Length: 444
Image 1 (cartoon, one colour):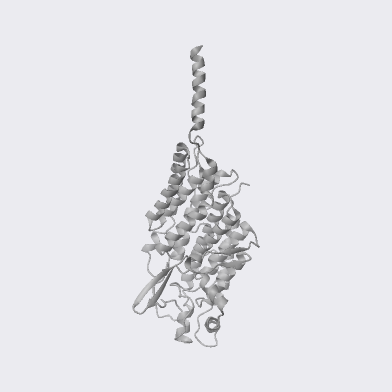
Image 2 (cartoon, rainbow, N blue to C red; image 1 turned 120 degrees about the vertical axis):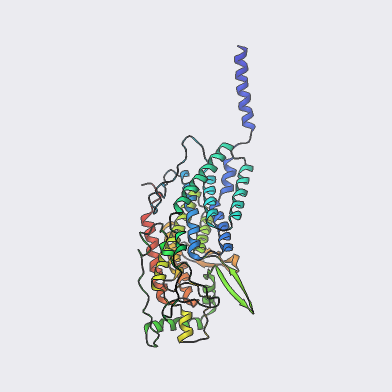
């Protein structure tokens, strides 16, 4: 009888002691991981900018980590389904063990960071961010078993996502021939001031995420090159020339706000230096992040949004680059200097790739179409993306308005003819709508 009383007392004592020990404090953890994905994308952007990735490559870097983040967080909502079977080549991903407990915001973060780290040059910077977040999670008192389970599952997800990414043709493209410059007056050739060689001439060989092929939404060829003054092409070039000469203050601000050239070169005397900026895709990823923070979106919606926008932007660049190197059209700066005014300069530095279609028009409208689907037609927002790069905020009444402004900014900047802008808008909208139609992340 005494032994029984002792055992009962011992059990009570153990329960009391365990009640006093540190707990898995979900409230503190949830508060710490609130807006986590927006924060991770901003930190990834800092690395992308510093590493000077081109716009197409940057779009790929945003897409894969955000897909991994979604796959790591979706289990918080039992109605959400995987991208498996919906994205090209993504046939399987590891699932959580039903006999183990996880903290899915941590799973999501680890998956995002591990994938992101593998896609950039500055691996140490991404690794350091992850270590700091893990340290904070431990200090907040996360249960060790749950912590270990979450880390392992996040790493397994990342490994599987990276295995899928490795088969998209990214590495293979480097073995393909370089772009060949010819004497054809209508064909693109390097432009001032640094005459860079053509960027990513084989980007259309990258596996799309949702598109059936790189040319699924081909917008059609540009106006036929013709240097005679009465030709339609000459008139399109004249429009660029006259537009830049007559820009007002607001139009100049618009051109500079949407410049998003990752690496602008400036020459002073005999010295050339470079100024790094966010990419066009990065700009729209930041718009999405801002909206999610304004909405105080739950982590599942945040991951769904960032992954869908990332996919839209990535497929937009694959589609756009397919047409760029199909038409290989000369830029306005080259044509105007040769046939209209040898001293004319655009407002923006001409990017180092063919003209048709406008990458900003395609990517912006693909992203805006997805965001409109998620948040509505008349979602007004203030875009502060360019503040870190020395530019003021701009306000928009809708995602559509912002994407239209991004598109026309290329005419104001003097780097695109109007058809590349207008056809690029349609191309982007078709891509965005296709992605919305094809991907279903909600259980029927």
